[in-house]
Picture 1 (cartoon, helix red, strand yellow):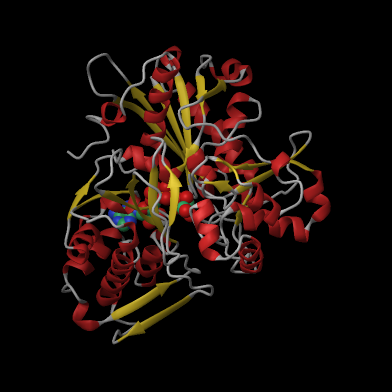
Picture 2 (cartoon, rainbow, N blue to C red):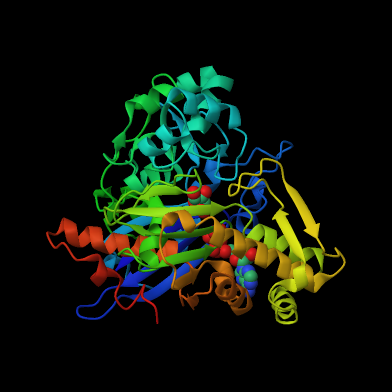
Length: 472
Ligand code: ADP
Ligand code: XUL
């Protein structure tokens, strides 16, 4: 059995796959720990700490650690034969940084996360030092973006130099969580490390020029980078003793988007997937790193050893929920509104930037309506969805993939009416995955792949995803 864990913006999910000879893996158990509801003492809203400054978004890393305890406690009482768990891999929201001192305590209490947009000045400084936006993108796979780890680290060094000095290790959420499992110092995989503006994308190693452009003495504070299929340790005895868990192998964690690539079965260039989660993302595999010429989107390393193109939208589920709540609807009412309005919405349109937007870059939240009456609930519902889908189509063209089929995943992919608008806007077939949490599934599949590899069997990725992360 293989355990996948996904530490996302709003919750920690766990999933166990059972792999029996000759048959595709079966999902035998799953569980989720919602941060706001189950860990209310941290005071987060949608997993984020309230902030006076709308450009600042942070979360308490201690909350993620406590969620891991709750998740493993649930696993302990699942009734599964835990001794069968051979390996554990994980997925985490990308870009968030965790700062530890030499004793393993937090040298920064709150971790900036991917929704933070407060580092425009640092982005400019790093870009200039790297020789301009295109040079930065060619080196790291992306122009310098506010939420990426590099600019966030630079801001911390500038604003709190003493605390930076005290920091012995700067983890991403993924390597922080893996460190907790093995009670050690976990490395990063290239997929998550490509969300930092610090890694040489073609070499999968830290880029000295980018480190120098970011903060002094940074190289010694970063984890190592190891291939995505690496076994990095075993489950620490503290967890084994507390929860009756076996000495399972710990596989290096990755970002939620690289894990989703595997969890949607996208192991060869061709199709794309759209994840409608807290953020909306559109992504697909790439054999070669074709960096976006117009600075939209990113190229990340894929867990398969190749690459992935991705464009990220901050106004995903939270924007849909804002419109839903504004008109006192539930998801059923939201769907009914989509059914009752025509494609094109009779010309009524919305720019739905309820929070600062990543794609296109909108630094200050603002919502605008065109030929759209704010009191008209149904048209507002259609306007937000059509705006999201139109932006996704426009800003994914750089990936150069002819989109014929879209694999839909994420919480909102449960909504058939939203997927209908997606199909209309893209002029493509949209296929819903039965698994909505493809990041967690992808993590569990990565655990299987790495375990086989560790045992000397290099299973092809097409075999890993067959029958479980495939289109029905
Ligand atoms: P994350 O990116 O944090 O992992 P999920 O992929 O789990 O998020 O998606 C959670 C979101 O899914 C919720 O915030 C909610 O807005 C949305 N959601 C759940 N059910 C529906 C539905 N029927 N229609 C639209 N959105 C939904
Ligand atoms: C990716 C991104 C988000 C986070 C949170 O670049 O910012 O998708 O990974 O899910």
